[in-house]
Length: 249
Image: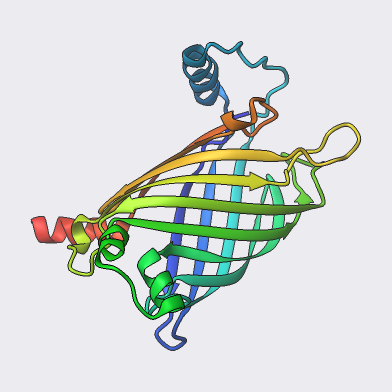
């Protein structure tokens, strides 16, 4: 099966509640495996010399999703809000999941050493101007939906990433760029014949520049294809795009 979602996402940082933010995401699209099967079997597997993944019964439906989160951001190292904790819920025709998560986002090693020892080196400060680290843990309860009626009862997820970009305080926000490499370990959405969850491990790469971001992920580090095995997402920041168009015109 291939899920092809068009989605709109709104994130709001509340001035009345410093550090708090909310997100609402709506998505809908047809389930059709032609594109994903082509990318997997005719591109990725041919490049890696792997046998094509056999295709049996296929889902054909119009699927939808709704998700919402409430997140509290707080400084952990230094003055910048680099720590977060929150709750969320994802619903739709695929499956349902209320969850809680916490982690660190774009942590500066210079700030870490300064928080621990009270000082840091200029070399580490320069390094932190271009390299940052992130990590997250998440726990969710899982309930089946139209697409996946039988799934694991719960989910444990851990993620770590390293990113390179221009994080200097003097940078031009309109020209910001970032490349991020992440590793995700998930206890698994699907189950085997005994009902035990099938653990998944993903590697993902993301590229962001100004109002455009592109991310792709694959479970190739598992050396198996229990699925979901491949995905990609293109996102446009409509507010930044409008500001760019307004200034350009």
